[in-house]
Image 1: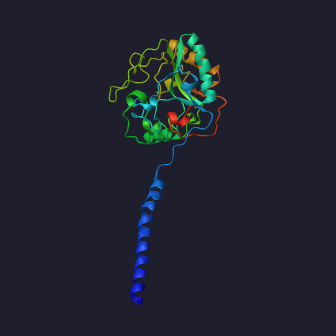
Image 2: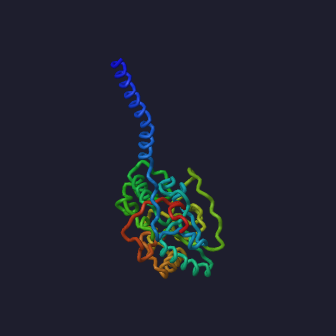
Image 3: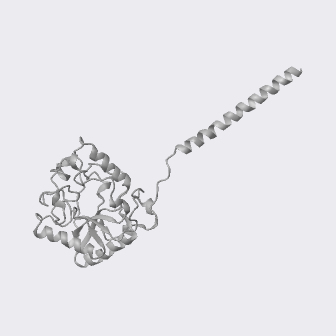
Length: 276
C-alpha cells in the first residue's frame, strides 16, 4: 500500500506539473504574440500642425498620396492627403495666403512634411534602374543612373524636418483638375502648359517635380509670363520668411526652422497630429 500511495502521489505531482505547463503555454503564446506585434506609429511632436487647421483656404493637392508621381505609385508613409507642417511655417503660409487672396490668387501645396520612410522609398526606386515607367513625364532628358549625382534624389530631405513645402499658385476661381489615370500617355514636364498633364496652377514653365534644369528658379531659358509667375510666387513667400531652393521653383523652407537637425518619420495622417 505504501508503494501504491507513493506511486499515486508521483502521478498526481506529474499531472499537476503537466496541467501547469499546459495552462502556461497559451499565456506564453499570447505574450510572444504581443511582443511581435508592430510597435505603435510615432506621432508628431508638439510644434507640428495640420495646415488646414491654420488656413483651410490653401488648396491641397498632395501628389504623393496618388500614383501621379515620378515613381508611378503612392509613396510610403503618405496615408492621407494631408499637409502637415511646423506651426511657424503654417502660420507664415497663412500670412502669405491672406495677401494673395486679395490679389485673386491662392497657394496650392503639393507636398509638405515628408516622412523619412518616403525618402527611403525614393532611394530604393532610384537604385532600380529598370523601373522607368514615368520617365517620359518627369525626367525625359535625364539618365536615371545620374539622379543621385545630379542631386535630384538624396538620402535625406529637408521636408522631413517639417518646415519645407512644395507649392505653386492658382488663379481664382480655381478650376477643377482631373485625376491621373495610371497608364495614360505621358507628356514631358517641360512641354507647353496646354500639352502637359493638366494642372489648375498658373504657368511656371514646368510641371511639379520636373527633373530638369529648366526647373531652376532663374534658368535663363524661362522668360516672359512664366518667369514673372515664378518671381511672383518667390516674392510672396520671401516676404513671410521662406527661402527658395534655387534648383526647384516650387521648393521653399521657412527660416528659422523649428527642428533644424531632426529628420522625422511619423506617417502623414490625421492621427499623427491629432487635434492640433
